[in-house]
Image (tube, rainbow, N blue to C red):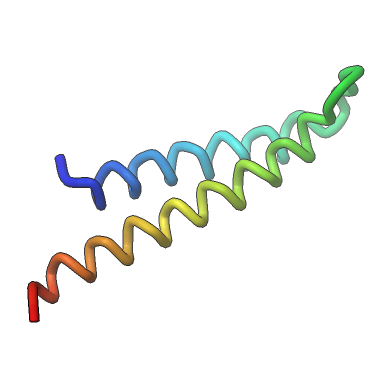
Length: 65
């Protein structure tokens, strides 16, 4: 499995878990964190990792110059 594939897979999983937290854990209040806010942060991190995976895939498909 290439680094680009790993980034795409990990980013997708992180984004989906963050979406789930943001969508379904809004009413839960914990003393230190709010799960909905953690979900938004995870979605941003997952999106960034997906973009990194797409960049790496495009870079390797272009080949050396």
